[in-house]
Length: 504
Image 1 (cartoon, rainbow, N blue to C red):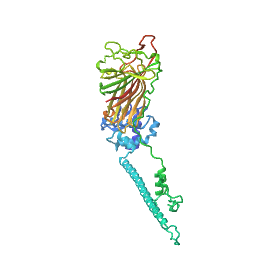
Image 2 (cartoon, helix red, strand yellow):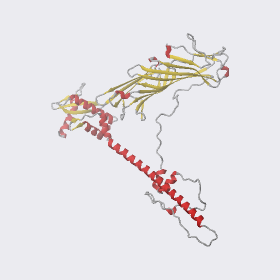
Image 3 (cartoon, rainbow, N blue to C red):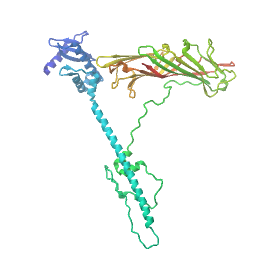
Image 4 (cartoon, rainbow, N blue to C red):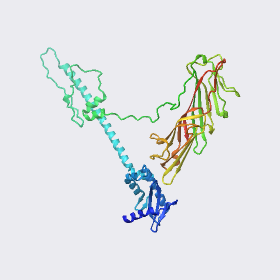
């Protein structure tokens, strides 16, 4: 087919596009046009009429995905800028007029020109370089040991000769003896090594110094005597490999602080939950404790009234009081007070007065429900929709991070506006939501496309947050004095954190 014929076919295409039609193909007497709108442009595939139209449509869709993957925007300037990459990708999809059995991931791998053999050769070269350095250090140690041994022999022989042939009143004049240290062959270096005459002779006027040791660096420099080893030792060492586990950080995050009153109650809860991807709960555990801190001695004789439960927990929720705190009376309001009314709570220090543990499967207690829905396609990619919704209105969530694992070597194409990042340590997409409450961002969705056709690769989904409130509804309604009188002012700081919050 000549170039003139191709240009005439392209010139006649705009006139053949039907108006107000849902079809994406049009035929003439000779050829078939299969096209797809791409914003203000069209991506067009011209075939003969005997071609399989289903396969042509699938090929056209792959062309469109390649364009979206390579070009940031589907405008004429960006396409012209990336024209070479686009032509190379199209050549991998269609060769000599026939469709190749490739998908988007394979095309991307070919364009990146990654070679497994090249990586192996690089690894082998680095190993050889490391072995050569180790061999150089080993030889340096051997040379240093030889030099020390020869200096010892020379010192012993020299001191023995001096004492035997030394003075006296006899008229015999001894023949001077010379003890030279055998020369150590110098290692081959990039610059001339210092000669042996420049070194300090083994005999000094001050005698031998006991207990003097050279550093390892000085020993190697003396043994090799060259700038190569000096540069090797003075070069900065590579940074150490650190533990990928995150360092301990502020557990409150962006949670607003509470101004502490003279009676301050701190409630802490931690939730571990495993949610099923099809719905339901596999396991859930909530552990909490209440700490009381009194700063005014006049308010040490008090009792705390807890709010009534709006949910019937049954035996799933269990309480444990401090040994000096009275047990709850069944059928009555829950009061936290000392067993002996004459005693007082400690002043100036926090006291854990109450602990509780919930182990059940009540879905209404789950703070945040997650619905992750991967939809694999036939071209080796997967469209993932993930949705969250606040279920437990007792808590307000801050610094929510939803981490979705990604297939190895694949990176997502986000189709919704959101705050996200790629975690290189876990190769996961971290979706960040600053605040989730009944008034702000109660629910939200995220959509992205990524290479890979295995839906199980996107699990388990991990969730982390810091919340205000109590999952079990534990709080303080009132604080009163044991002997009566005006109720004191109090403050409550209720914090919820996550342990293993998973969607499996």
